[in-house]
Length: 136
Image (cartoon, rainbow, N blue to C red):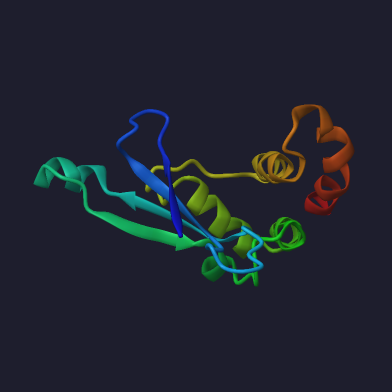
């Protein structure tokens, strides 16, 4: 089944969807995919209503077999080594905004470290190795 996430700013706006294994025998209840949907604000103002479209599906965009923690960790490592994969993540991070700022090596390290650590007090422990790979 599909669950919607709502924006903190306007609760009627739904932009993130994730799919769980449903009510079936032996279900793990794991999240099996994630989609981000967006709309063009200029078009919404022009037509007086939003036209939502899917920006990406996590599994399809990043070509990963699942959203299990090990697969996501592999993806974070791949982002550190493969600029094309990181650029795709960065585009999605900014919801495909045409005015997104550029992202230099320090920006890349910060974003990848945020993905890796999840907790500010773990940054040094969890990010040193991946930051050195980005610097190499």
